[in-house]
Image 1 (cartoon, rainbow, N blue to C red):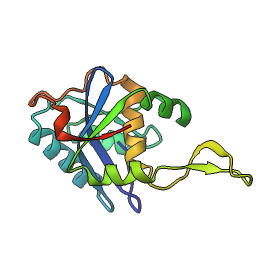
Image 2: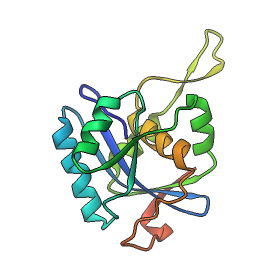
Image 3: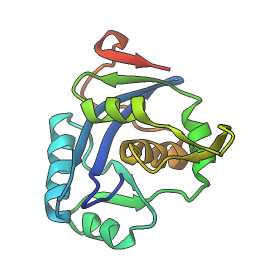
Image 4: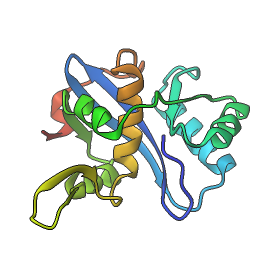
Length: 165
């Protein structure tokens, strides 16, 4: 999860099957209080019949927000701290499928770019734009390798998702 105010707060429901990652649902909204964000996450968990104790891996630079979500009964934990590029490389090990309703995730993945130097060489540093859902995905992958995040209520069929490499 990525916390925001001016920028959106983002929570993703992610599943996996072998080396495939499924972006199933999203909470993506600006100006959410922690109470509102917690309720939207609970609604998403209930909608997909995911166990209520599912671990939510959060931006580790926001310990206060993590504690507030925990106080709301969510199993919120700080994501494992890694270098951004290390987390991106871990994500690149998955073929990504995006459920049609995850419009914000699709918009971000299409617009995610890396900085360039004066000569036009691509640097190993993402541009700080269109990165909130990408960060939320990275926090999950770098903390778990997606070992335990298959939704309990539904079988996953590749045809339901838009394919992104």
